[in-house]
Length: 293
Image (cartoon, rainbow, N blue to C red):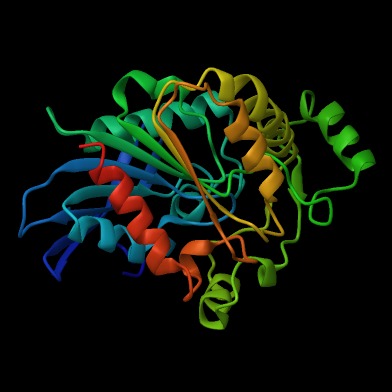
């Protein structure tokens, strides 16, 4: 689906009702996509939270796959990102505070949840489930941004300056140019990413400083407090969010927690776009969810 002057568009394909809809949340209009199974019983509900600098339409393939497995899927463009960012003005890439991010995810979970049905959260690069732990049946984390490759991370002196200025001037724009060749080997997907007006390689120093801080907290303190079943998916050769970060997060999870890690012998950040691995990635998610219904 493409953006136009609409509030709601609905199509049916392959037994799935795909609805693109603008909804009001606090002071902004948020772009959402819902994938609803209509030829089989809905067995669970799920929110997919996209990664840094991108947008939810990129998750159509996995959303359709999960919906065909009986899972109601809701995706959305976070504040400051994707179509939400474009429609509402302000600074693109400024998603606000992490407490605000948590509130938005909670709002979407409440919107999609079905009484008596399991509720799941899928996150790309983000790994904090604490604010909604009591409501969730499980969390799937792909390529958690807990240890960023030094080659793509801002220099230490820049990071220090960012943290210092962020508390005083959080809205100063900051650009961190991403090498899209590290995302995926699929040239079609990569070209679409580069050409899309809904992917941004800039944010604010406040957001970036918060991301750096949260990465350390999540892999250490946050992991030890994790109380929700979790599946961690990671590419061994990811050159953006390196494997050691995911391994550290996983090793710090409670010993008695229902947890699983799947390492893919893949050299790219977006495993779900790799032709060699996407089928296994999709089925790994669906099978893990079904085992917890």
